Image (tube, rainbow, N blue to C red; front, side, top):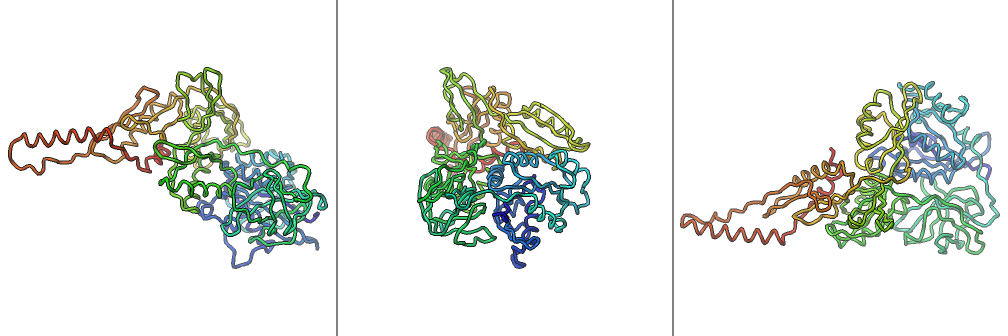
Length: 596
């Protein structure tokens, strides 16, 4: 066990984690020439297209140092704030972490939050200054930032380049010398923690685990502590670039197990695996349950596909434990699911994965955050959906979630960033200079304000030189109202939104204008209205499509034409009473892009 090292790579977005992982694979001869490509571990099409890591990727490497053979279990983690749950799970399976800092960009918001995650789990931190080969590298300045942040000695920082391979041998040495070997007893009862899982249509559910105590052997009967279910370990093995079967996996090592489970809900990330005959006395304390902050409805375009969508969500949840969902129904869209996400990028990725990997054609409703509604009877109602709001007369007050947002940027962008945060009802709590060219701004602001387009605006305003991180601080009362959209007097619940009263008028007006562009004309007039309760605050009208019923009349008395027009008028009146307005799918999508 003293020759095993478990570590992960943590950093802000685009600081070179996956590229450094490529070089580590090269240096340990874990990959042959034929399979070489950039970002080998990013095996999802979406990851390669967007250039971001979405899933943590575990891989085992062999390395010989001073005549001794070592086993490295490396986990490459995502950098985006929306995938921080992936990072926290990876950290729980490790004893050390490589903290990567880009020499040309310096320390950024996600670097700091990932570092704190690692320190909470008592991980040994190895600071690495990456991309030192770049023209804009500020080696001395960024080294000072790292020393200030971690409080380490300057000699502990390893200068490296993931692209050229410079300094990677020093990183491998540091992993062996600085990161402690895992602690555990291979003879004790089996205790293994599941940190990830995936679904394979041929083999069923594959669980990735770290053995804390004991040994897991092929063919023995194992038990999942939380669910109480028992299975045979049909295959156990280690995670090379391709899974490699083994006869057993002992304490301190990381591996996978296939039990032939076909039901996704029978396995839970964070659960403990033990032996059925000699079980452990208690399960390992797993991870905190994920707290989704953005909720949106996902509906199949055709209601016949409801069960297919349920199966797809179950399988996707195995691969992404931060996705939370429950069934719901809507008047406008039929049966679907209310899903919880960690942020808007997470929502976008889930939507794309459902369409690509599971061939689901879906409609997504307007994203919402969770609100707490208190009634005059002192009863608390948690609102995931505006349509759950009780009658206005029974509401005492509504609370909305607040976040503490941390923005790190350059001094020249302070003014515009402050303006953006103030516009989003933010309050500046603190402003401090980390160095002469890096400023940290701390804001308190409502979560609902950052859900739509905050991150995109921040990036364009600062030309990409602002990094953003946040955490929830709690709930505060707010002057919130429910905005309804009516089509010919009928509410379309999929467009309902909880919004601050000051912004409701502007939002309602723009939404009506957008819908007027997108809803096709009918043979009757369509009134689009935005309403707060019984009060209409905005209106647009789609005029009727005119059918020329008098075209067949040539000559003759005017009364013949009038008779036809009267008949048409009655038909239109009846049509307006019974006619249904079809809302196209792009109208639901347009609400998300209202500010473009």
